[in-house]
Image (cartoon, rainbow, N blue to C red; front, top):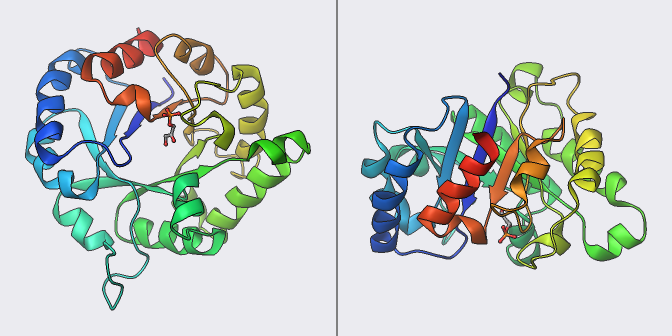
Length: 247
Ligand code: 13P
């Protein structure tokens, strides 16, 4: 059975108290889902310490939304991989379009972060995606393949096999305008083409995914789950989304 992964990217939502309340409600709802389904919650940094004890001995893994590529140093406001690991973080989203747009994550810094995450035993979830203008110009595949190749540049086959990818068309994020599953599949097949035959590498779709449209995505051969923003914020709604895709 191939892997199916749903990762919640909470962005700048939920205090530590909100996070604890979410997990109280969410964990019982997902306990009985099939074992091949992997679930990751990526809260804001300050909510990570409250999520960690709640997730111990559960099936849900803990993610972060970014990190620095250096292990320590004069980088005001940044968080390093060892700091994340100390609080049980096993996954980190890298290259999200909001980080690329607002926080200077570039192809080069994403590449550095991917390497550091792998060296530190944290699974990178590498996000790529095109703007509406790039889509209209017909350069979607060229753009996302370029971002993917840059992020994975010179990784060993072993390391490549530990990466999760996420295709998030920027125009579909938070807009309610999800990308048609067939269109996403075409782009994601091109992304898979960058993986040197690693057909098991999970590739997630992100962009206005919800409980109503999720089944259409996971029915596609190169879509292995979702990176979910808005629809991951409500415990019942997110549990229903995952159940709609996997039962
Ligand atoms: P939405 O699901 O809110 O469109 O956000 C997607 C996203 O950016 C996840 O990383």
